[in-house]
Image (cartoon, rainbow, N blue to C red; front, side, top):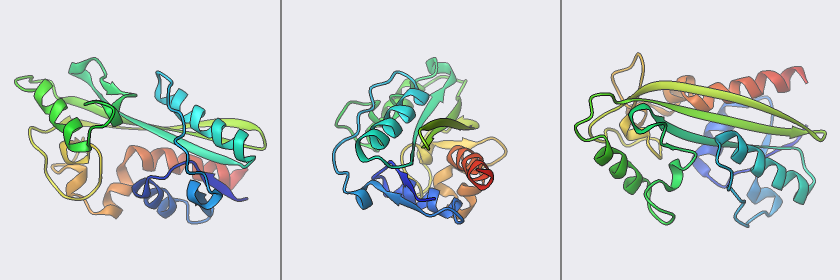
Length: 190
């Protein structure tokens, strides 16, 4: 079975490909999908489904899409579904990180979780897979690996940020890895 991963994010593609070794995937680039896929849902699940449905309906391929959000407890779950554009539509990851750190300045409770939802559409049927990693937001960025909020998130049971971990180490414990492992198991039994 050939699956399209509805992403143009090379970091995500690399992470997912390394976890789905027995199931070859292609990216949006491979099907010549260059347009911006809508992400207008107010939930992480909704955005994952919206992206997968868009690719499935427009390109008539079996596919999956993911959406991830950082949910900070003392910020009422923000940035959540708006994680990628938390500091504004055309802001960078560094701007998003700075906004979170500013909002958490002086706040003791720095508990947070990363949540990934993968929406799979195969044979016109939809399936969802979720991965959650709990941890804390540290006071300043540490590490050079990863992307997004990786430099300020330390998962429970660790004393280093995702960005301080080697790619392989993060891929064993991350929220996306958990969701992809569930997808992988499903595909192996499909």
